[in-house]
Length: 298
Image (cartoon, rainbow, N blue to C red; front, side, top):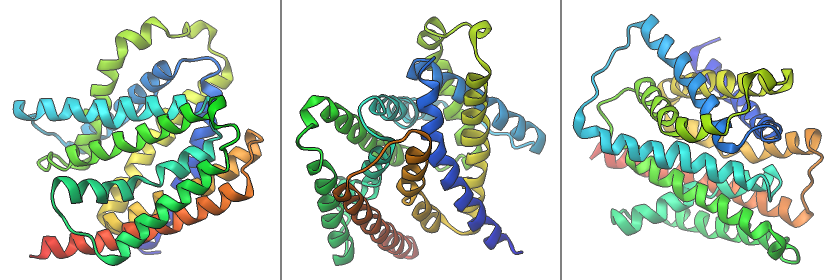
């Protein structure tokens, strides 16, 4: 089995793992606040990736000029993103959250057009239009109950979309650091920033149940540390665009896990809207990857 096939198999397994991650996080928040859950997740991830860096002797030097950008990356890409995502679970089924998150590539293209004046081709524009239509189907199906609390969930999910896009553009400016070093810095920075609030509200370890220990270990070791290693490997072996395409199928694995473990369900209109968003997002990612490659070749 060659390295590309292995990378594709690992990415498929990772998408399934991340779908289950939402279920695990929802169970974890029965005993922990979102902030405390993020803290232990990031702490474990930072420790494991730090050990990997020591073993592989992958050292780096942090430049002072990059510290403000790094802090901004931590605030948008780790803390604000997960705060929005975890709190949205209080109001929405996990599958709906990931459907909204599939809107990320479309927003990315819009921001690039407004801020960097980068033009999109006709296929990308059509993809964005269908992404919007898909989101309309999803939210419109909830119209009768949207003002009973779900509107907050959708706003939080869109907050996560914006946070992740800001994070992507900020991270792009940190080209001097390899992905593993950048992951370590961001996880460590998140742990430090969250520690005062998280530790103050943390459930005493003596009261942690076996189930909570499993939640913490799953999120910190499998989802964060091992998951990031798989992503970094995929970026090197199969490239950024194919890797990004896999993440767009997260709503499928999340919907399956949500239905099986949380007994959550979607309406027919929401399923149709989700399919439209995922398919349109796939087109946007593929076409955007081609344009990026053309720009780099110039």
